[in-house]
Structure formats: structure tokens, C-alpha cells
Image (cartoon, rainbow, N blue to C red; front, side, top):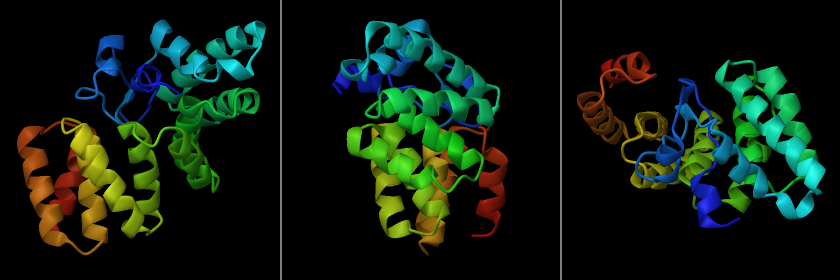
Length: 209
């Protein structure tokens, strides 16, 4: 998968805001978890990442499924999104965009396949901050901070304006026992952005440090 395709990687998170294609193409502006890109061109690029494995008719079908899967994710209809993304992955197992979003959807449904799916996406797109965040956050949630925190640190360095990645990093640092590091990250995060999706959780965590 080339760099252009990865910079257009579809990524969905809790806030489910819609990004323009230009925002998706910029590493500095691409939130790793707090947004979903549903523009036609972004979907087309993400689907075409697995194009060598698809016949033309299947590419068209996969493109439509990717669009509808991400619309379902934006609506928090995770079961529908999972069904559509699983169908895409079945036809194009190396589509990192679909794998990444599928891992996220599994995570929301507390499906144990989330981590393995995120690992697959990471093998295909290890330099994309959204993929790093997905895997890093899953690892932190499962208590593997020794692997999760470095991934979140790298993701945060690549997208320093992503409040959600920085929040994930702060949680990871706290779970790893680095309360000073977590406090510093949260102080800076809340000073920079007081209204991001996890702001209330961030303030609650900060009070405990």
C-alpha cells in the first residue's frame, strides 16, 4: 500500500465527525480516532488499496460497502459496520483501511477479535498514525502498556493536534505508572482543547493524579 493511499486511510472514532478529503491527506490534521472520512474519493482510494485482489465488479461492490460501512460506524451502528467490513476483508484481506476500521468496530462491540485484527492492519500499515493508535489503544486497554504506550507516543508525535490520540497516550502513561507524564500530557491537552470528545474523561482522570 503506497503512502498516498495510507494518508487517505478511512478512520472512525467516537466523535464521528466528517473530514474533508484535504484534511485526510494531511498527516498533521488527521485525527486517528475522533473522525470518519466518508468522501467518495477517500473511500475509492482506501478500497483500491486492495484492488489487485479484486475483479472490477468486486471493486465497485467493495467501494460501496466501504462507504456504507463507514456511514454505519459514524452512526454507531457497529454490528452493521462489522458485517460490511468483514465482507470487504474476505474479498481483500490486505485492505488495511477495512481491517483498521473493523478492529475499531470489534472494539466497540467488545469482540475479542479486535486485537488480532488491529495487528493485521498494523502489519500492512505500520507507519500510519491511525493504525498505530488503534493497536496502541487496544493494547493499553488490555493492560499491555509496554507495547501500547510506545505506539501511542509515536502516533501522537505524528499527529500532535489529535486530541484523542493524546488522551489515549495520557491514559496509557497512567496505566504504565507514569503519573507525572500522564498529568503533563493531560494539562497540555486540556489547555489546547477544552471541548474534544473525551474532555470530561480527561478532566476526571487528571483529578486522580
